[in-house]
Length: 579
Image (cartoon, rainbow, N blue to C red; front, top):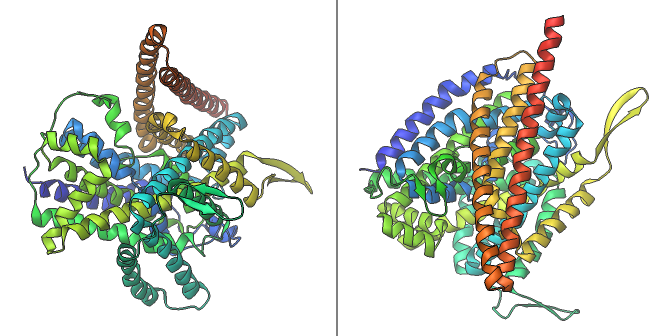
């Protein structure tokens, strides 16, 4: 089968969805351009700061993309291209886009606060505390994982380190030109985009490599391994990035970096259409795939960001809602960005299924999904007489740049959640106001220390297997919060309640499956320890037990919030009947 069919079919579906379904959803949730956004009413020059739509789209897209929409579809391709492609298209249109758009709108209607504040208003303070603790744990894990991934990339591909920090410097200069020198936004962008791509060339020719023997810190006689050196540098960077006003670094960097991903997607789309590599993997292979598990529910957990992701709701109600200039911008920023990410997921899927299954499985096991993607993009770009090596390096650098974006956005979001967790209602002059006991510096420091400790210890690997289910549970909870808000204001809830039921079903099944499998593995390990006790076996047993406990807690959290929501809706119905 010709792979260009998948790209063209996906593009047509996404264009029609944006033209018609996005408009329908915006009416259902009440997008109203006459209402001022928190970026204006609560402007503080640090977090609340209005951004132009293309700039905010760049930030939102860069933050939600990262490496997840590439890794998920490539790993899930083991089921065959059919179910993965169908889920990416249907999921992006009817779940992911609705989820992201509605998360932005519900946030701006609650002063740009997180989904946790929405839960507090309609489900009570206890629900908010549970949700924010869950978000904090998820974000600290994200910080640790992406910090470890970026540090490893900087060690193995030093060119990415040079390019990444040149992007940061370039973004600051771009911001000063626009915001302080009042240069034309259009012409400054046109000038800076070629400079942005030249950073890739500079990175390749001037790689920032740390010697294998490590980096000696003068004065304290401490030698850091190359990996730990970069983790320490990244800790300093994400602290500064999280407390710095968004207009200085976050907005311009994400806006400029998004052009890398746009170029990557453009090269992938046109390359696939011109090269049209044949799909060698069957449309469907098997229902139960090795370590991944059964197609239902694991397909919907594995693809993750390629169709819907709970992490998007944290970004949407965290940094994005605080920068939205006008409500109508939420449609291209929320719904539009999700469709672009869906297109990226289709490209990633094609880079995997154009390989024969044995070759795909061997490369996936030996080199990982990013290498599968980079080689696929390299071969597509070669259609334009560009050397395969350049295409391969470009794809790797682009993915690394977005992993760095997700890292520092995640830190800022973690700070927001921590500040909200320690926010209390206080009456002053007869009025009730919210006041946080943590400023942005102390809250950021706590997040950075916790994330850094987890990254340096390597223990994040223990918790990562459960992240997929936790991420999709977050999406279900976000739909739950939006649905209750819509019900409360008297609007149609079916466009969010049906996706919510589906996501809860998938996630709870995935968690139950995980608990049963980990319990079984723990029993096997326990029996082995009885006959042959080693430290490695004991560590593996502890890991399995931790995963069982974590999955059980997530299961209880999801069921608990669901029951609380049903009780709230029934109570509101009774009150309406009495009236």
